[in-house]
Every structure is written in C-alpha cells, then in structure tokens.
Length: 603
Image 1 (cartoon, rainbow, N blue to C red):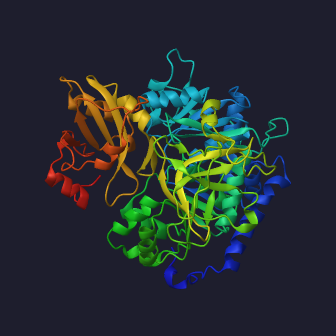
Image 2: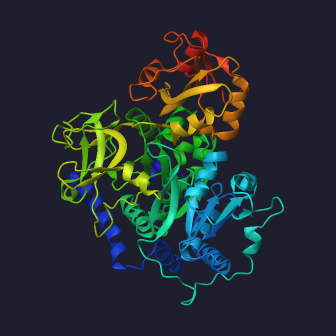
C-alpha cells in the first residue's frame, strides 16, 4: 500500500506546447515498432516482456492472478488445446465470460493458434445472442459455467455448435479440465502457425449507429497498434498498475485497459464490475497508478460519500472517454488527479482523437504535423434524413467553426494501417458506413455516426450520436433491436424506441412509445423485456397510445416524442416508469416525475 501517496506525487503538468508535443512524439515512437517486425504480433511482443520479467505480476483478479511467465504458459496451453481440437487458422471461437485474468489467457492463447475470438457481452440473451453466434460464424463457444445455459439455448439445435463450460456446472465439456494435459512451454517451430498483420484476431460486437449487433473486425495489426499507441500515450512503465473495472468484451476494457500496460511490463487489476463503495479502497490496496474510466464512473465517484482512502491513492493518470466538462473539473479537483487523458475512438472506426492538453470537455485535436496523414472533417448534416448534407454539386460541405455536423475520416490504404477502415464482417454493413465522392470524385470517407463540433483552436467536442442508437450506462443501445423485441409482445402494433435526457445522468435513458391494442397487457410486456433484453437496453419509460404517426416516406416520427420526453405535463397518453427494482410499472404523474428529475428516484 502506498502511504501518503497524494502528497508525494508530482505536481500537475502545465501542459505547455513542448510537453504536449513530447507526448505525441512518445506515442508515435511507440507505435512505430509495429512495422519493424512484420511478424511481430501482440503475442510475440508479450512474450518478449514475459521472458524479461517472468516473475513480475501481470494480471490480478479475484478468481486467479498471473505473473508474466504464468500468463505466457497458460496461453500456450490454450494454443495447444486449440490445435489438438482441430481448430484451424481463421476458425472462430465465441467467448462469454465475466471479467477475470483467465479471459485474457484464453483469447491470447487462441490467437497464438491463429483462431479468431468473438468477444460476447455477458448481457446477451435470446435473439441478440443468436445473431452474434450466426454472423461471427463461430465453430465453438466457451462460456463460464453460470452463462453456459444461456449459450446452449442460443446455439442451433442438433449440437453442430459445441458449447464448452469453464468451471463446474451442468454435465458438459469443461475447458478447464481439458486443458490439464497440455504443456505451457513456448510453441515450437512446427506448432506455430503463420499469422499476418491482416489476419483477423478478434470480433468485437457493436451496435454502431444502426441495427442489431454487428461484428467489428480487429486485425492483428490493429490490435498491436492499439496496444503500442496507448502505451506511448499514457507513458506506461513497469511500475504502473492499471485499475480496470470496465467490461472486457469491449475494446476499451478488453484491450486498451490491458495491453498498453502489459507491454510496458506493468500490471493490471481486473475487477468484475464497478463499485463506488469499493473503488478507492481497492485502488489503494492494489497500489494502482492508472484508472481506465468512462464518464459515468467518474460522475458516480463524485456523488459518492467522502472516502478516507482517497488521501492515500497514487493515481497519476485517468484515461478514458465520455467525461463531461463539469464532471471533469469536480472529479479532478476533489480527488487530486494529476492528469486526465480523454480520447475518442470506435472499435470499427479508422480515426481517433486524443486530448493530450487535458482541455476539459474536449475529445482531442489533430496537431498540424499529423493533419496531412490523419484527415478528419466535420460536414454539414441533414437532421431529417440523418445523413451528411449534399450541395447541388453533389459534394459535402465543411462545417463552420463551432457548428455541429457529422465527423468523417478519409479512407486510405496507408502502409501503417492508421487510416484503413476494417469495418464489419458484413460487407453491406461496412458499405453503409462509407461516404463516396465527398470532396472530390472517387474519394471515400468513413462516417463516424457521431455529431461533433470544432472550435477555433482545433479542439473537437462530442455532441451526440446519430440515428437509431443512444448511449446509456456506458453501452450503445440499438433502438431497432429493442423495438423488435417489444413488437414480439401480443397486442403491440407499432413501436418507437428512443433516448431521452435524464437529469443528473450521463447519456440518454431508454423510452418506448407503443401503439397498443385493447387487450394489451403491460405485465406481459415487462416480462418479455426482462427475459429478452440486457438490463441497459430495457426502456425505463413507456408511453402507450392507440396510433403512431409516420412520415411521407413511411418512417415513424420520433423527433417530437423525444422532445416531449416523459414529462406528463406535455403528454396526454398514459406514461409508465419501469423501475429496475420493482416488479410492476408505476404510472408517471407530476409527483413521480419530479422525484425522477430531482434524482430522488434512481435510474
């Protein structure tokens, strides 16, 4: 435990232009190592660290902890198991497991054997899970014992898709038991499979801006790029320790919070989930120097009671995204955080933004010396058609300074892969993200799906997500996916799902307007929601009506519904609050509405 760490830490950086340029240079030098060895996959870079620091702690979790040497050995055993089970290069194995050190060992080992790992959200059930297994073309599923039944239910009938359990459970194949006979020694030349930078390493599921979950491609190059780039960004050292409570089936919690620190020889503390009451105690007890955040976690920490452990922490940097400027200042001042490093990125995207200056509220900027190789633009947006506006010439128009539009990035087959768009497994889904003939005939740009603005100094600011996806509790919620589940309820005729502002909360809370028949049963709808939707995707507010309006192009109108929110003074239709802690839905009147707005009722 670090005693009096706050008083001994360096003072906050003045963030001069020279210091910011050094940060950029350090990150560029780190990622330059990617092209020094065309066979230098993530596992090989990790092995070099493990050979140098075999007894140093690497991963720490409640279930198990591994030194670098132990993690290397464990992953080698998984690689041999995969080869022995006839899993070939390019085959896909789906992995559903809560945060723990073993999670990393499994997919690292499978990657060594050339196997692609599809990382599944532990909240997935029913049709959404079936969709993920289908589109990823998984040959096998590995699930922790408690999630094994959910995966078995979603797997096709007939046993064509084997579902293995990790840990004791029902009578089934147990991966942990099957692993015992295999050696943990480094793979020999005859065992190693040739893996190229362009080969797929992971599939990470994202709702993107529309539709059901889509499998974003993460190549071996992209995986190593992320690890080495962020190693430089956060200046990770061997004495650093990252606190990670973010879900590891996402790119931030599973890659960015893990691998930059490991490749620097540092260690990562993995927690199953976030806990306000345990956070500072664990940060101090595990002697963490880094914290990977999403904005909502920082907000929750500022609302928590004062904790005596705060004064003993040695956090030198918090890195993440989605931190509102008001929360940024409160969080940094209350907990004496020396530096906050905010960035913007997406799993499937071809550009990122980095706020090395620690400008509150900004998601970063592109320095002049990178502007020619990292071409990002904000273009005027047609909010009714939900697409970039086209001039009479057919071209797009750049936004004026301070004006909101959609961020897009030039697609180029760069040698370093920086601006390549790997997209999704589904070519049609990838094509929908591409804008063509934007500023010149034949050019191609990737749509971010996000609205942004840029100030006169070049700083970018996130405004909102576009279209049919909103963000709640750190997760992207696809309105189409939710609507399809709700439409499965008897006597539900039409549905519009949208996000509404919830005071004192990050993102938007889910709300559904339903056109229902005479025999509609609210309790049946609630049961369907609880059974088929993950918690973060379940609408918190319901609006019942006998009909919904359509546009002239037969799209359901939702803008006015979003503007009215769940305010009973603006709405004549019956409104209900779907309390996560209550079985019945509560009618929303003025009193309940006031309690929700004031934060007296938790969402």
